[in-house]
Amino acid sequence: MPQSHSELSLSTFLRYCPSETPAAFDKIGAHKVAKLALEANALFGPGGPPIESEQRRDALDALDGDGTDVFGKLDESFYSYPDDIAGLLSTYLNQSR
Image (cartoon, rainbow, N blue to C red; front, side, top):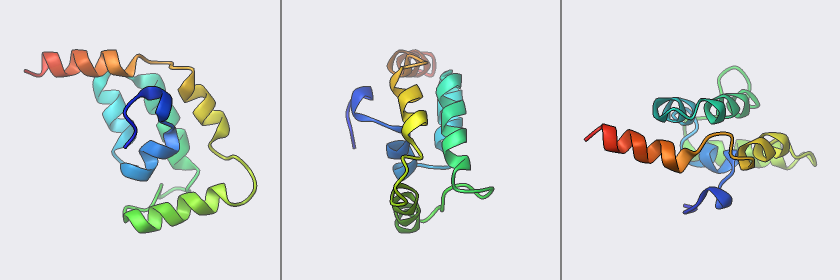
């Protein structure tokens, strides 16, 4: 798994934890990124990305394989770092102790 924000993308998060991603971002206070994750999940249709990891990888590959960069605009927004994820996560963890 990537170790820094610069190595991540929304598709990376969706590959590992699709349905939990928006709620996790919201929980730590990264509300702008949570909204982006919801938009990314919506690309898969009303049911969101498949729960099963192999099916999810296949669905991501199908979305990426049609010649368009469906995650491109969302990833650009994510890379602009709309929320300080590391700082928010640190604050959340410190408050949870």
